[in-house]
Length: 171
Image (cartoon, rainbow, N blue to C red; front, side):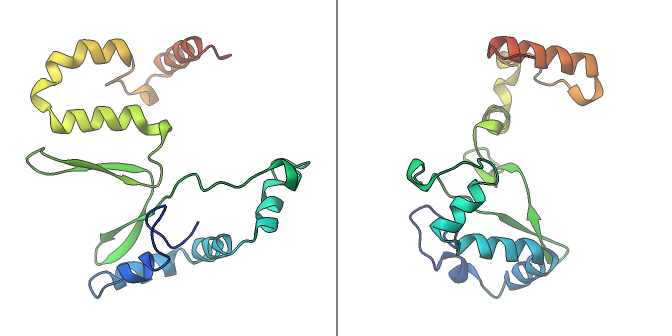
């Protein structure tokens, strides 16, 4: 965790992003989420020894010589203006131009856990005229696509079971 917006960015990325038009959003998020801000600042300045101690909460027998810290990636938290104040945006959101010529992904979790949903969301936004032609292929690849599994426990169990079987996991 750090003040950089990109993995190889500058430690000045966050301070340099503050402008007259967004200072209220930044300050309102900081005030509403002060415990989170304190936690993140502490994480930024943790030493290697302190990071290993944090690891030991999950792997009690972890030894320094067995571990090497890597900077795996960089996450940036989205702050959205709402009613003149800032609100932290959790999760992942696809944004696209009105004409569908470009799309992007914003969020705190743009990893494998959301890759399929994001790809389908982008395809829907960017190529709405192709959706009907693609539905059979999408349904074959993602049988639960378009279903509200939260509303149908039996379909949810069926989907979990099929996923577990495909991935050779115990259901």
